[in-house]
Length: 350
Image 1 (cartoon, helix red, strand yellow):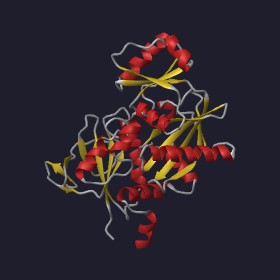
Image 2 (cartoon, rainbow, N blue to C red):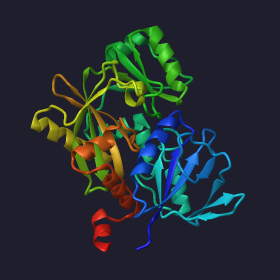
Image 3 (cartoon, one colour):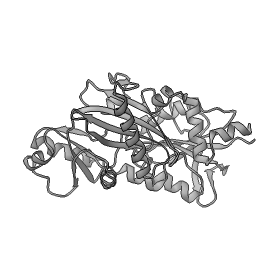
Image 4 (tube, rainbow, N blue to C red):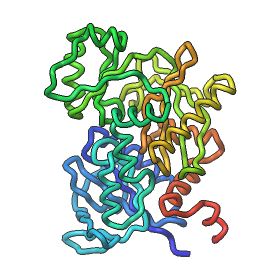
């Protein structure tokens, strides 16, 4: 059987460029070259696409040909060499703007190439925290109370907000990832600065109640209605909250308790909500669902990530490893899901 050609896309224009490269290194190392023909597509910080021969320690497109899509043909062409690249599937390991917001997924649709993970619609919805919260609320799923603020509008009154949401509050961009632009707010001056920081990443900012509770995460894999949920991870962050440094820095002191120390009924409830959230938002392939569990036993959905990290610290693969699905098999399964096949079918045909 011919090996499917996988175009691994990484880098990108978002502030999460380096995170994407770290994730891509792990995926690159895990892919079985006997089963897949891997092609490396690097997107630089200016948005140019390059075809790389290998993934080196210092990623550079120097001397590499550029990649250009040929819409409707299922292919890319390099220039100046005019080589035709025809991937069977695109595997985007791209975080943030122009990566997990539906942009690449929409391009794949126009190219007529399947993509690993969520499609354009689900990706764009989940990337928008306000839209996600509104859809989940309509489906009877609890989310952290919030209001939104658009750049250019009058700043909300802190005292009025604190009566509605309490204090502290969190301010974050509606469409960004890896905790970029997220600020914890206790005062009017801090609110003003936080909104300015959030609007550097998006025109719409989310102002949420500062929930004091346990941070839980669940990995979801597959296509509804046959998607599966992992066990539950609890993230403990001495830094105060799970910011960019806590997620990705080598000096991070974040702790990941897998499985989380929860009563069985709470674990199953969190997993059930994760599965419901995934289906309600039209996800497929993969996503990570994040929760808060507060002292009164209320479970809030915090947010989703449709292209979770695959770095050494990332929770998504850790949870599946705990469930008995090693990293390499997880990557295989994701690729086959993108191709519309099952891992079991592939193994039977070999």
